[in-house]
Length: 270
Ligand code: MN
Image (cartoon, rainbow, N blue to C red; front, side):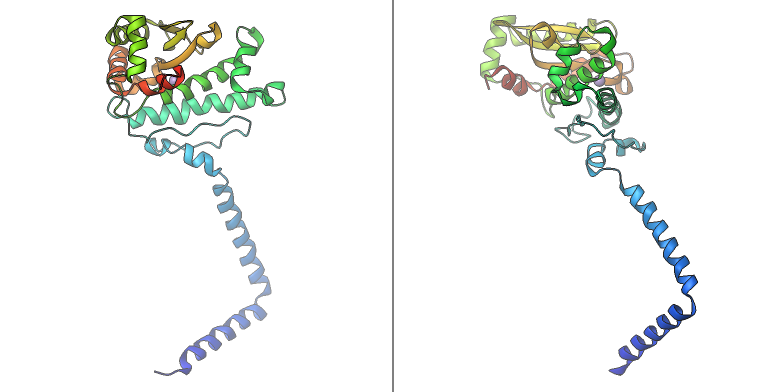
């Protein structure tokens, strides 16, 4: 082993660097500029906010590019389960579009619509209440309510859901519907008979529980009912997996995904 070799190499490299430095100031400048440009490009690529990258993970399923989120007071909540966790009732492909594209668009459009308005400083439910039925505020209302509804919908589902409700909720369901199965049937009917786009809900209405349906972005909360669970029946919720067979999607959700524990939490009987 020649102990001097590393030093020789080092000094050789150093001399070479010195030669380059002295002989090519212009060349080095060019290199530095190119390097800065590369860095700028890399930086621009990396400016997609980390939260966006994380929240948009379902889009990785579809391979679709992810647009940066619009900066504003509202943000897409993280999904409470993995992209493929609801498969086969709701595929990762459907979830990728529904959450990563549709729900994201409601959030982005809401942020655009409230920019520079008093709504930018209001809580989501207050915005919905303030704009419900106000014709010239429909863009704010629709996007705000759809953001609320979708955030609630994701939590109304869970992998290995369905089955039997917690005991306290079951008692309430039996009192209002006669049986849990009668409640399931009402949900199925409401979800399949809502004409066009909308939602089916289990709600608390005064002293009883009820199943209701709403059109487009509407929520039963606007009528003083407390939402306990919801099922999205817009075509984008099921069309990739079921095409026109909405009833098959709804039956799958009720039987295998419904998060009865979430309803019990909302009712305060968990
Ligand atoms: Mn939807």
